[in-house]
Length: 196
Length: 96
Image 1 (cartoon, rainbow over the protein chains, first blue to last red):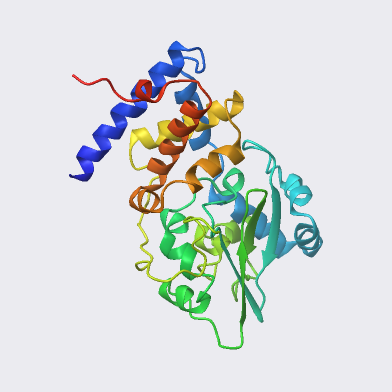
Image 2 (image 1 turned 60 degrees about the vertical axis):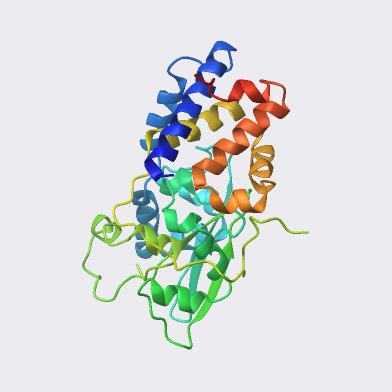
């Protein structure tokens, strides 16, 4: 059976279940489209990048962020309450001695309210199973070679707790504005599978 | 006993594959499944923990064979039947 065929079969089933739920008053017309639009217009890694840049330029903010991320991100107009329930956010910062990387071994828990949809590899069994056993090897596959002396901490997200990594500020960026700094930060940097 | 979703540390999975410029959803139905789940949880048909549990108790061979949003849809239809919202056969597309 081809992937296209599987897709058209499930597509028809989804439409059927939606229609059934509409007929039983459990779904309003247009509700699904509205939710999709809202989701796609929601979080993006630019939010995490903005938080990171602020932490790089403002040591006080960095301290508050690492102590109580849910409160600190409100200072930059962000919140973890955008999803089905407010989730606890813990932000961990990379240093010269320690690198952090995030996973959800049980499913796909991720700060969607903040970073938007997670990448497919984050949800894959391959990543979930291996990054806790061999983080250094997995990071190397992502092109991130860490010195042997760098300690790696792997944070396993759960239903109630989400994590985000603050990458290290790159050398030679002293003259950049906060906005320019934010532009350097990638989604993988915020998960911990890239340096920035 | 741990369930099949508890893969942390397990060996035997393939290499990690990155997809460049990956879209949030790979097909329209995936977006619909995502939104449908949010709507049903908001209405209190079931809650997030029940949803997660419905994915995690899938038979291991089905879990491993299913894509991410196929698992979601399986969980949604399982819960709709268990909660008495619809009979199992009503959740299937009528033949013919």
